[in-house]
Length: 346
Ligand SMILES: *[C@@H]1O[C@H](CO)[C@@H](O)[C@H](O)[C@H]1NC(C)=O
Ligand SMILES: *[C@@H]1O[C@H](CO)[C@@H](O)[C@H](O)[C@H]1NC(C)=O
Ligand SMILES: *[C@@H]1O[C@H](CO)[C@@H](O)[C@H](O)[C@H]1NC(C)=O
Ligand SMILES: *[C@@H]1O[C@H](CO)[C@@H](O)[C@H](O)[C@H]1NC(C)=O
Image 1 (spheres, rainbow, N blue to C red):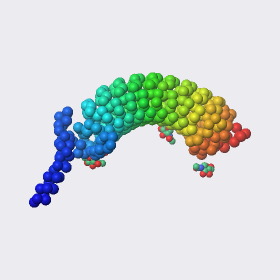
Image 2 (image 1 turned 180 degrees about the vertical axis):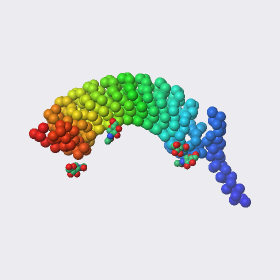
Image 3 (image 1 turned 90 degrees about the horizontal axis):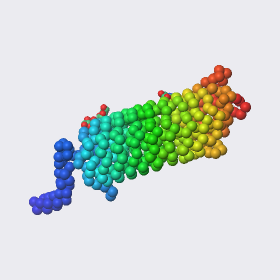
Image 4 (image 1 turned 30 degrees about the horizontal axis):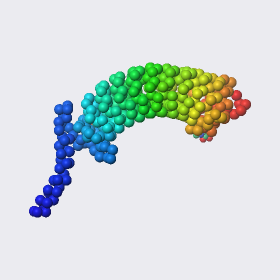
């Protein structure tokens, strides 16, 4: 009996803070909904608490005041309650992927001035209010991939002066205003792949002039104008595959002195203009990660001599050699471009 009482009072005293904590979690939230963190994993770390919730039925509330990392993912949540994050002033990472969020209200992210990562992958966002991101001056990574965004408002991203990684792939963007990325001077990686873009304003990349990786694949681009890449001396990786490119201007690539990878596969190119290739690959730069020109309707006549010379010099970096074929003229139809690139063949 004595030992039971002893054990009990000791257990009670060590448990007491935990009971208080659980009670605190069960208080009625601002919305009048009783909720708890029961379904979430809460881990204290030296920096602050991390909270991870998967497959939950409502947004966790209230959150620990010292929270630094919050994940609420794979839960099909349809809204982020407007005041859910009001007390999370130390939050550094917010992961809300794989829900069904259709909108985010203006002000819902305002207190998060220390946020570094915001991931909204695979939701149903159709638009975002102007000013939503205006206080996130520390944000490094913004992922809006796989949503239904249609309109890109000129000032939407202004204020994100530390942003290094922007992912807008797999949305429904048709048109981008020329000032859309203007203030994103720290940007290194930009992914605009798999949208509905038909043209890009030539001054789109004027602000982010230190890009290293650019994804434009899977759009509806027909032409590459001079100007778009004019201020990208550090670009290393460029994806332009799966578009409908028929025309590339002769000087389109001239400032790309550090390009290591170029994917132009699956376009509608039958020829490229003289001078286009001179700045790429040897001798100014080895295209060390390779290039892909396959699945284009190349017409292998004398207009392709310039490309063939370049191919020959860089053939060790060429991908999909067997799928880079001549579609015409009839005499060489089906032959590999590389075989015709042997000196004297064309
Ligand atoms: C979310 O929706 C998907 C697809 O409808 C379903 O498979 C999954 O079980 C749902 N998850 C939750 C937490 O309701
Ligand atoms: C998600 O939660 C629902 C009930 O809310 C459950 O039926 C389902 O099995 C859960 N799915 C996973 C993957 O945990
Ligand atoms: C080629 O690109 C089109 C879009 O332009 C896409 O629908 C198709 O699947 C792509 N083909 C291959 C083989 O990747
Ligand atoms: C390319 O074709 C040649 C012969 O035409 C064959 O020997 C080689 O294995 C093929 N390469 C690939 C990667 O399929």
